[in-house]
Length: 114
Length: 112
Image (cartoon, rainbow over all chains, first blue to last red; front, side, top):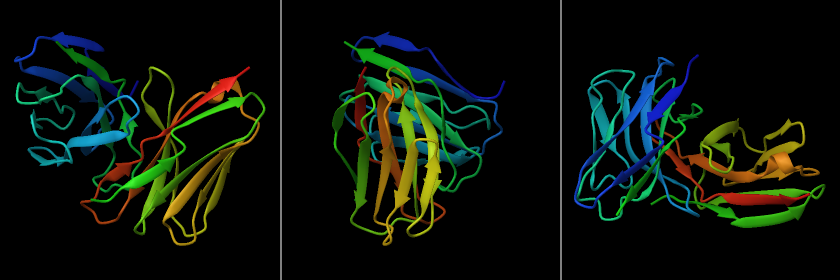
């Protein structure tokens, strides 16, 4: 059964702690993306990776870091430098690197930082 | 930066009424995609429009891409309760390194 998995579904952290969100895909897709969604807002791009061992900043990369050591995995770390980390985080992938491909989304992780 | 404006932000309709959401860009788009996100769920791809003036239909859903490739619309005929959710457009400004720019979405509620 192909798809994207994100874990955990809900995550709670204390302010000042780093936290890593998992994203795994078995679709053999080249490109992977991380988005942040806030209530009433669209999806804002945090980071994306078009190939293993390479990634680029999106519109709101400050306070986040990523790695792409394997094609199927693209974890996102929310660092203590992110001023407002509470949000719904969505991981996506596309078959190729160009934005003309449809994006396949994972179920998301809802992060709450208090 | 580039922006895709989407209106309205919310739409409440009676079941059976029609619904339309609109997206506008100040600059020409290479293509535009539409997604649906059910409450508590994740966005799911609906369709992509590429050609100027393109119109595509999926059952009760009609998607249009403007002649100038700067605007797009999604129209749902005779809404049903299963249509509830948030509809997003996402514009691509072209180039192999480009990324999708999402509108803020239109949240549709349908009263039975």
